[in-house]
Image (tube, helix red, strand yellow):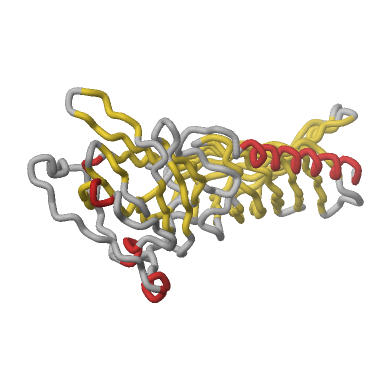
Length: 347
């Protein structure tokens, strides 16, 4: 039995680690990795009248997170910059202006990244400031952090086009090098962490179970599994209904026990998939002996355990788990320890 448990643990560990090694591969925007991070993409296209937009290549951005961490990204030949980041609010700013068709453009926006809003599309219509490119050519090369991070960003929307500076060009603005004090005071706006769980969910799992009872002299192994379904409350709690079961048939004797219960899942971390589960409800114990007949009893049932949701798709997680459940009737009681693997489907 110990050999079987070690074998099952090794299989669970191998399956658990597999999604993490593949998460770094190419994936669409909004994909989550094993650590709960989201693949975000910034797409920059410069529009031209009567023509298709052209990608802005080699444009550098800084993403400033709520905890002060900064990520530097740059657009490729297709005008796309990609990075893995945790869900939440970020300040997206260009340290250096983009020279385009005789003018210079910069962007400074607050963006909110979730699995459903992981593509950030930019054109010159969302530019925060525009200056004449001829003046920018005379600026010295910047060797420190951009001064724009010392200012307060604004939520920008693409509802109205940028002014056509070919008709009226504004006075160029000189961007001064920031002082050490300005760089130390450049802090992002802190907001609550992003909500990473929402909507309906469904879980199915199966594995190995070991049962003990009041009259048992040893633990007996058998097939075990369960189902659960429910909704999400906030970003840490999921509620629903669940079932558990354990089954063993050998030499003409069959034993079956399980529960139907109200279930709760609690996630201590905002981004981690680790959860604690529990539930209370009704339980049953049934037996069938060849030549003697069958019988069953009903009583109180309870469930507890641990699990981990490992994202493998936008709405599917691989879920290794360890549970125990107890059924108590007027004549006896049983306790089952479960270890298994399952899948959680969620919105």
